[in-house]
Image 1: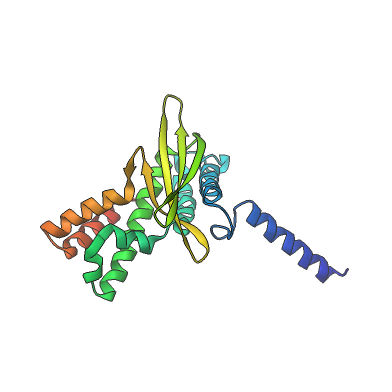
Image 2 (image 1 turned 60 degrees about the vertical axis):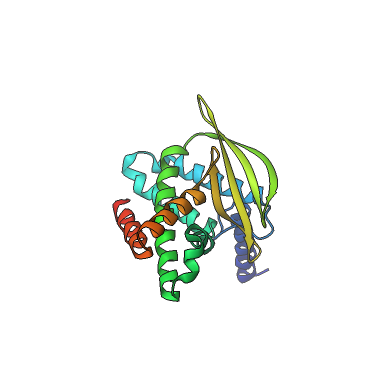
Length: 206
């Protein structure tokens, strides 16, 4: 086998290893919901506990790496539509696209901060998968030094991949919190007021 053949063979091996280690560009086709969640949490914990990224001076680097994981793991268009409820369908195409973009950026920034603060050296215990509507709920328990917190991940399939669309922390749904807050703002004021507030919140986040 010539040099070109060796390069091709090693290239295929490297690609396989990257996929097996969960370092590819997104959820691996054919993975179960639990495997997807485990891969996401493992990657985030590796970022948080990487000695080269220790300390407050590297927090921005950790945040960027964690945000990349979040970007490819959630179904943001679905979440944006459901967070706004029936009001979403009354928007123009341009308004919908802007709302999805702002919602996605706000969620990514907020959830990245949450992960930076609360997911560090904890142990994750995985529970059963259960059917949840058209998707699946993966139950986990975050075990800390003095307590444990139930965290459930809700996923559904898009183009053959399992993507997250909600996280339920100690019985509280993140998506439902958005739904309640957004609905109240739209009812009492307007969609434009909601969008303006979301942009203000986004600017205030690191």
